[in-house]
Image 1 (cartoon, rainbow, N blue to C red):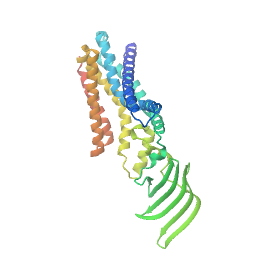
Image 2 (image 1 turned 90 degrees about the horizontal axis):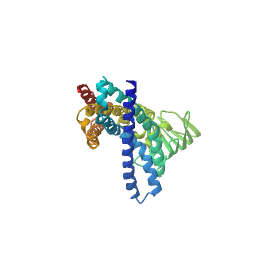
Image 3 (image 1 turned 90 degrees about the vertical axis):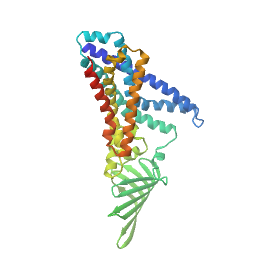
Image 4 (image 1 turned 45 degrees about the horizontal axis):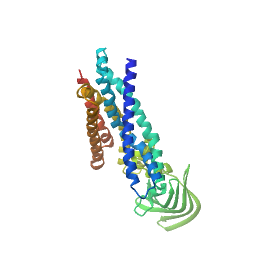
Length: 350
């Protein structure tokens, strides 16, 4: 059984990676043709941007590619009667499913590695190629400045240079619902202890009037860090789980909406699980209608199943944003439904 497990797992892994390569090749051609038509981008930059977009696409396409690849690989084994021979030798459907899921576990770990360690740097490099500096992404306010909250403090940076360097900074400190202090600084640099403000003017509002002081430097400590600010400039789906978790904690501590980031974090959990669920669905398909189908028919079946999962996944994600459905439920429900259908179908195979 160990040899059969390795054989089935290897078949699933190789076929899934071939399917993923085919999907990426097609999308690469389409994106490259579309990018070349853009007169504002040079051919070299278009080629580089298209290449940098591939890791993100690979991560998103992993479950779908796994489904297509498994249908092709296992369908080939069924067409050659290899699965029938395994059954005749006493190997149960559940044992075959376990071997397939063993290969799926390798694919799920690979998908996680791509999402955590390849997609984030590729997206940051793509932003650099587009000429979008980190400072551009930090201008989140309607006035083109950076606005951020840290407890009772509200920060405005008119000219953010980077996540660790802000210029023309104004810090508003509130106490009991009223403005208690205003701190202005020419520059702010993030250090280990917090933000070091330079060229500081502090204005304290008290019952006896205003009190104004000036300082060469002043240290502002809080939960707002350069690491937190660096998350602002990136799309939630392209961030690694650790950065998402850090930013979610910051948002929740300041009573700010963290729904989009919590959904992105749960999707990080759902993607490798969806890869395994897709493989589970292939088992009843292989042992029933797809067993006698040709390669084209298997691909059609895979596309239909993948499209149904994709539509359900997107619908649940939008429902979570619009109707306040918990992000964990929005991200995991389609996977649970798919896995339940796959398990139900597998147990019915005779």
